[in-house]
Length: 336
Image (tube, rainbow, N blue to C red; front, top):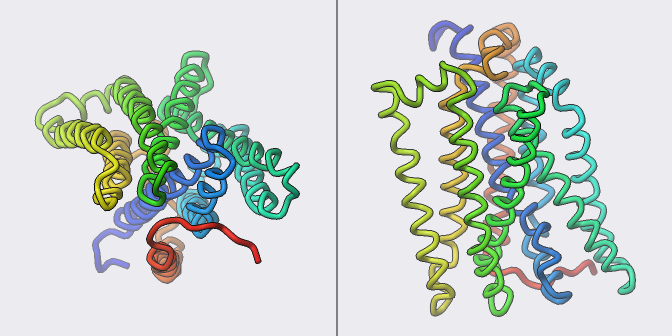
């Protein structure tokens, strides 16, 4: 354990990095399939089947990353797990109900009689909306330090709306890549509208974060710390300009560059997430508990790390393999 230095330092840092990576992958991957569910009411009946088909091979596996992230939080930072889950019990409950509703409706709509299909389509949308809003609300409350005051709840409600719009945008970007014809054209229109919600959400969080504490304010605006953060807004701005430029010229001949909006959207989410990680480190509970204070004993973390080094590559390998096998345009989803 001493090979990399003090295990009380590098082990909590390693688990924080693994947990952060798991959350980021979940937000991007489950974000687009939640976004597709949010777009269901905007599509006609034939297009709804193609929307579901575009996420059919991936949606349940994407949620594995959420399970991994929460599991790492529990075993590596049990004190923080108790603090966070206690504060966010209600939105977590709403999120789980939404995810369960999505799973049930996804399967039932394929077997339900035609007269009941609309009901399950509505349930799929409702589950996606519940999960998205609750995740956005939890994000806002986390940024505000998990304290339930009226201004903090108002900010959390605002981030709930913005994250939901952001998910719908990345869902539209996914559809641009995975569909063609009239549905792809409609997805381009949805993405053009959704991008400004995503930008507004990132801007709102960016404006609020420095005022959470003087420590974060100094990390953002003191020299040379501000220099370390400066590439993030510059690259983000460039990505937004690139996205709008691409969307304004789509669809391209022979469907070229249809993957670029989704790649750029992933970049925007990653940069926003990186800015948050930079701001709150080393705290796992903002301004209350650091990763080093919340960490389990180094001996326990080392044993858990050995197991994680087997589990994480397996999940990552399965994810890469599934996306490789089901590459290309979405086809009709059948349950024969």
